[in-house]
Image (cartoon, rainbow, N blue to C red):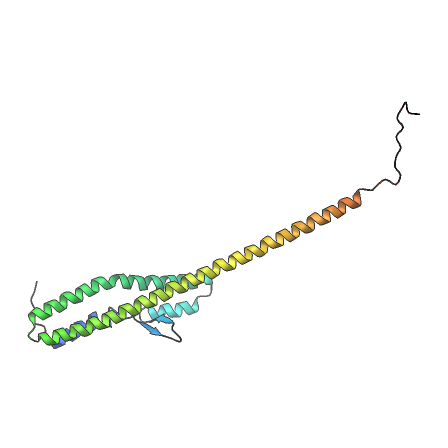
Length: 190
């Protein structure tokens, strides 16, 4: 492994490249209205195109697919966070052992760790908000489907009762009661 002498410029560059610009862009969440969390739209260079594509989506299936892809990207970023943090830790460890300004490296590492922790917690909040929203949406969908199913069952019962009543009424009209009772003469009783 090649040894480098790390200076202030390199530490700031690594802090920036492993920090908010590359690793945590889009991992943070910003509050929008009430206590609602929305993921930042700066996930990647293609995020602006994904947000415009979301606006252009005309059907529910397309919107659902875009939301699913966006959520999947957020989860992938969260999974990749571990390796990125390990890389940053190795870099800071190397800097600390090779740099004369150890206090500056420690301070930079502290700042980086705090920002990383805050952004990770924000990202987890954003992901949990999305999961809750998705679950609420699916529960509402199921409730709506159950309600429609219940309405259809009620209509079927009502139709069946109507058919039964109409059938009885028609049968009672078809059967004519005899006007006169027949008398039976039993032979031998005369």
